Image (cartoon, rainbow, N blue to C red; front, side):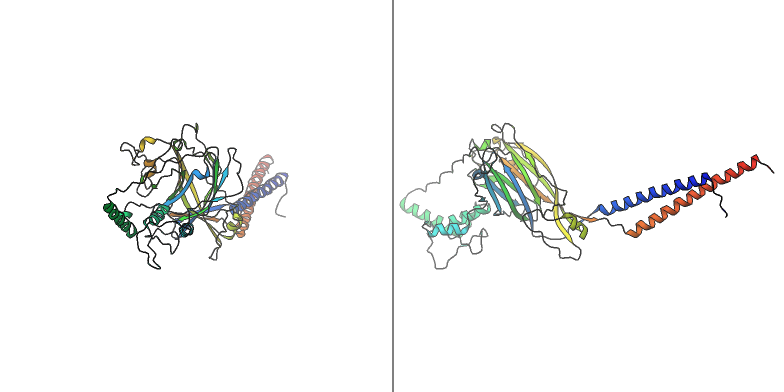
Length: 438
């Protein structure tokens, strides 16, 4: 009874209702977007894990499997014997040759022991005592391994890639053999002949190699690398090398394709793919070779919450992910970013006796300077763990927040429409009174 219906008022009301519906749709869309988004929180990584699981799948189109060496070492000097990787031979067209896979592993102690039992002659002059087991001085591959001779001890150190420089003066087995040989030489007046140096290994042509599998490394900075088998010893820890490269080895083609490289478990829903399907080739491979170096910075990452774990889906790796032990479902993995560079190979930096040339310049500073000093052609992956971790959770806006916002939007728009309508009504009455004065 107190309102007067007009065409102008009805039009204003309809426009107000349309505006309310539009704003409500925007609020609902914003609320739904908040629930699908994620938020990241950076914190100091305080948890201690013993090992870091790494999965890789790399193809070398121009390197035969027998000529490819794979090694891993961390900044603490621990050298990992990689037994969970496999090699597949490829022909020149990249197709698989045969069905057999070659495991990447050094000869085990049991194989060496079996060869010895089958007739290998022991070079020790030690009088064997029943039950005697010589110490390997920490270089044993399995518990209970014995190093009864100097040769066995040297082989054990070679497998670990440890220095053997001081063994002849400090190890019990080597000192006794050296003294016995020296005494025998003095008695007979014969001079001890030096062992001939191994001849440089020639590379096999027309084959490629695919390396895939898993390896567990210590959860500290380190490096794993693929290089040509020189047939000589390389002492990575002392930053020295006894490298004697053949002419073929200087033309080693390090072109490669990284099909997969991941640290920690991977899942179907993860958008991060690192350097997967990375293809790097060397131009004029018959004339040039060099060193590919990848610097990977690892960031521990935790996906937290039931919704996040469900969105990740199933694991894609060859190993099953560990189940969470907390009330809130969590998934721990590692993301990384990387930089890369290619250094052309130069044999001028290495002298014939294996020592670095004094004029050779070291271009990189840090824990792995020896890579630049040696310049052995190959592919190197250096990784370093960040002391920080990223926790990723899903945004969750409660439904009550949406309802409160919708009611506030509707009430606010209707109130403003009423003010506008009242303003126009007041102006209309004033104009009518001026036309028809009393």
